Image (tube, rainbow, N blue to C red; front, side):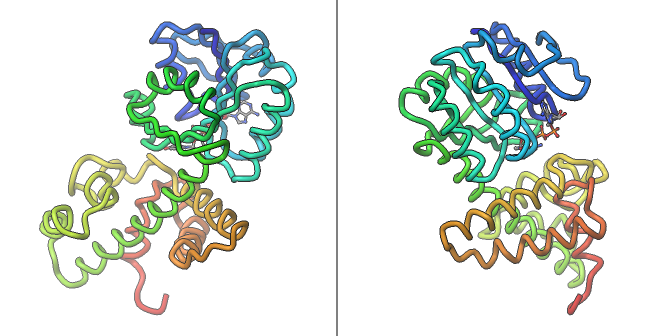
Length: 290
Ligand code: NAD
């Protein structure tokens, strides 16, 4: 297939490289200077759109997605797949679907989970929102970039699933950091506490796979000076998306709201540019009432 790939950042670059490695002809565009193995670099978004069988976007947020779609949707080949893998708000996602559908394109939202490691290894999880027809067409491409593909429902359903998942992740990471910070103050050895929690009812991805304590559990950003990984400001973005979505449907998410406030304070004070698991440092340093 001829594939245009727009947004070659931490996630987009390895995803595009994997499509090229699988034998597709990939044309990549990014506003920054980037080079990706096997991908032909182009200078305009239009060159990654015109005549392409599929156009994939992996962009920072809904505002940017909207401006890129305004530019590229009118240039899409009739019947081409337009696949957005960015994490964006529900309204931007739905409006992208609508624009693409009105232009006679097959539109899919497929945000991902699995981080840069998963993007490089081709083991991402894709949460897909699309018609059954678009899903059937997009599945072989997603199978190259990921190891799990879940069709969550019609357009926008992938974003909805991603927003729910990441709200839970933000909450569980704060809970994990709280437990380790309390354990330390109670005089517990972090390694012993990990051994208990990772095999007991407290076990979760934030404890078992992405432990926020340096030198404890499998290798994680904590072992690398909290270099992201998944930046605290991206977690804050996703938590805000959850609150925005909850407001739209009048859902009560008290823990999600609290997690958003905690990450807001963290990013404002010391978390900007650090991995989201560096929340441990803030909680370990604070005392009751702070
Ligand atoms: P990133 O900032 O590394 O990459 C975004 C890229 O888009 C950059 O290279 C930027 O130059 C480019 N860009 C910005 N505006 C553009 C435009 N108008 N046209 C073309 N290119 C443009 O971000 P990332 O970490 O790759 O994340 C991308 C998306 O994936 C985000 O929505 C993020 O929330 C989501 N995500 C990230 C992770 C992660 O672990 N990093 C995990 C899951 C989902």
